[in-house]
Length: 202
View 1 (cartoon, one colour):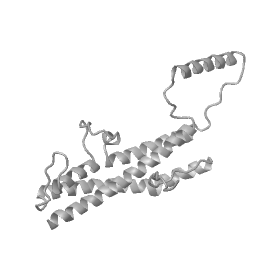
View 2 (spheres, one colour; view 1 turned 180 degrees about the vertical axis):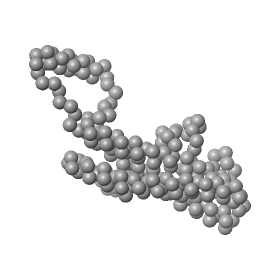
View 3 (spheres, one colour; view 1 turned 135 degrees about the vertical axis):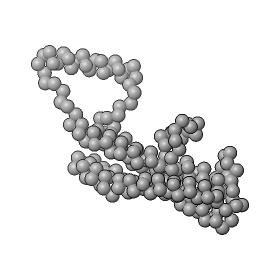
C-alpha cells in the first residue's frame, strides 16, 4: 500500500506539471491569436457577402491601377505577423510533447495517434491506483516492475518537454516580447489563464 501510494503521489505531481505547462501554453497561444488578428492575419472564413465585398474591392483597385493610381502598400506588419506565426509554431511543437493534437481537441474518440505524456500518466495512475475506465487498478498491491519502468520512461519524456518549455519561457518569449514592445503591442503574458470567478453578492 505504501509503495502504491508513493507512486500515485509521484504520478500526481507529474500530471500537475504537465497540466500547468499545457494550460499556460494554451493561454499564450490565445494571446498570439489576438495579436495575429490585430496585425491583419488569420481572417475568419469569408461569407458570401464578404466575398462579394472583396470582389468589389478588387475591381475598384484594378480600375485605380488603370488610371495610374498608386498600388496598395504592402502590410507594414507583415514581418511581425510572420514572427507571431513562427512563435505559435514553436509553442505547438513544445505543447504537443506533453499532449497529442487529438487531446488538444478535447475529444477522447481519437485513437489513431500515439498518446503523449499527459494521457499516459492518467492511465498509469489508474493502473497503480483505484482504476480508470477499463483499467482495473492495483491500489491493494505494490506497483509492478512494468509500471515502475513505464513511469521512468514517461518521466524521461517529461524532463525533455519541461526543458523545452522552460527554454521557451526563459529565452524565446522574452525576446519575442521585446519585438512586440518596440511596435507598441502588449507583450504575451507567460502565466496561467485567468479564472472566471463570480463574486458573491454582485
